[in-house]
Amino acid sequence: MTTFKDIFKKSFLQGFSRFDLTPLNMVIVLGLSALFAIYIFAVYRILTRKTFYSKSFNISLAAVTIITTAIIMTIQSNVVISLGMVGALSIVRFRTAVKEPMDLAFMFWAISTGIICGAGLAEISCILAIMMTLAVVVLDRIPIGRAPQILMVTMNDYNSEGTLITEVKKTCRYFSVKSRSLANGQADYVIEVRVREEDEGYLIKDVSSITGVISSSLLRHDGEVTY
Image (cartoon, rainbow, N blue to C red; front, side):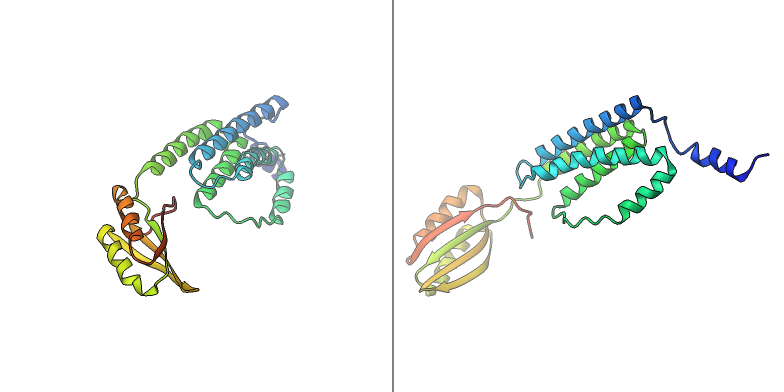
């Protein structure tokens, strides 16, 4: 006579695992996960070469991929262990804030790859890696405009601000005074400007020629463009 226990074991417990977790299968799955982890490590390193690169975060991406794969394989092997693991992981608190949106995307990619590999669907991880790489590379290369420059000027005459603004207007298509400070008889200005690359030298030359200017410098930055 078929009991509810037999039905439950046949329909759920026996069908819970997608593949038999033999030692060979575990080595193969973890090996594939390690390959994807190395690939994510390389992609993150290449795409962040122009910004602040964190080697420790990149290593953690690879580690998270492999660890997640092992967790999913363990969950598939035994439903009782899976319930205990869910309870154990629910009390873990991660307090490290992810500041960059791209770092968050890579972290989610690493976790997703680990889950997919642990479920025995490595082909989906392969497709995900290709699509993710293409999307990130293409979108990263789309020009979004030129970042503004920062003009820093130090003067010994605060009353010469009008002359400074006049000279800036002659060369710059856009400018905005971000900071004014006066100390020990010297005035310091921080001005955000948009100037063509070929006119940058003329801007510094014209500003430096103003009577009372002690120093002037034009800085660029690789941050996000604001409008």
